[in-house]
Length: 625
Image (cartoon, rainbow, N blue to C red; front, side, top):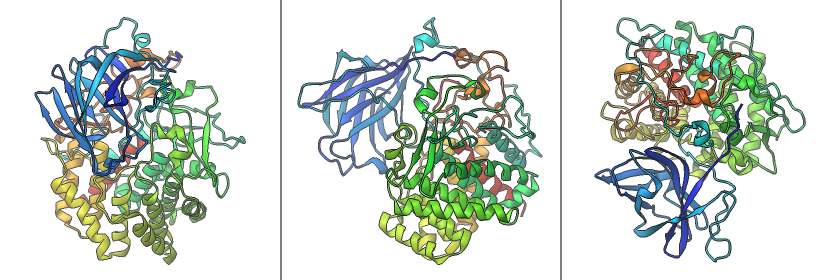
């Protein structure tokens, strides 16, 4: 195993008398990844605008703002998203981006922030461990925490390696074009997509993501027991659960979020799983999560929300089975609360309890007991989990706050128990946190649209139905679409967002809201992913599916061969087929390359598959009617 150090170059920018900086996290021939970091001196309440001009034509991907205009691929003007229109005084705004197409840091010639000029002084280089202005009156930027933030996607694996160490020749790895003759290993029936086969494949992906002691019926031949050393501060057993994405961290917040979504699909579209003979498999997938959550809930108001250091994990490229070092574990407590994490876990346990009601009543009762306790913990000891588990903030920061998760948990407990106190709590949370607003997405972070649709389903009240319709009408009729029809809500994991939206609007269709229109929309989105776009984005399914996902264990050769950064740099297809994984997907123009080094478009994640799989189950449910 080669451990590689994190290297960063910082170039100073000057905004008037306030120093800002251009941070360059990674550079390669023809491009670089970094951020413009701007200290906010005065509160910004009404949005922001950032303009970047290059001295040459480039392509730029940025996920913290909406592209408002561009000119000759040299001048790019971005505006705030709805959720980051306000920037607090004393904070630092990190505008993250990736530049390709012959771009280098010095090719940035002009930056404007809210109309104010930013001048680049490229002669000053700040090395790790130093400060920009250690003696002046302007803000001092410590470079100890050089985290990157992705508010919309899964684990943002900004790999922290020294590229010259990984690829000593200095050349950019050449990726061979896809073999266009690659055919599906999973069947397509009668020229229609076999949704049952997709469910089968997706559940195989979840098996490939399992951590801990694997059962004897493990179907993934290249996976075996891993991370058996995972323990809490007092030796508590924290084995099990799921690896998040292409890495081996167990992030509790997105793990709970995907579990809730999977359970929701099973509750309402059980017939799809029964018809496809996947019901037992989805029960096992859910229980792999909930058994772990029960372990992590070590006392009534203590819950372990993360195992593994994201930074250390991303500095290594290997198999989970080869990892032997002890890993840190972080928990939330009364003193260090995490209402979003704990509330989402309560929702996952409550939703899964409904699934097990007719299968294992004793287990259902255990799930409900933990769900009730965790909801009370979340509601009575409030705080954002990413303020308490700061390592998580660099990967899964809670951007939307915890109000949506409190309402989400109460709504799922209402559905699981029918107890009026939970409906009263939902209504209180709606009023306190303004949850009647229209969101622009439904994601692991923002549950607002989900709780609106769920409450419309539970109560049939007009106010919730109107909120659900408002969200889905925006998604279906107004939200940006690619030329081939994919709803494009974010470039990071674009297909994940489309799958989530498809599922939420199928749920709205279930209660008679614009049923045919929303069904048609969901079908278009899912079929785009399965092949209507001209290729499949689900590994192992359909034609020309991805072969080089950004995923460590599947990129490794079969044991006992060594797995290291050579596997990452290999132009060959991943030796292990990660069947069922949905990759991040294309850009806003339907462009996509099957590149292992593109973690924006080609990483996979457990939350990527959840809404997608539940939407597929919904389409199979309607297809069977």
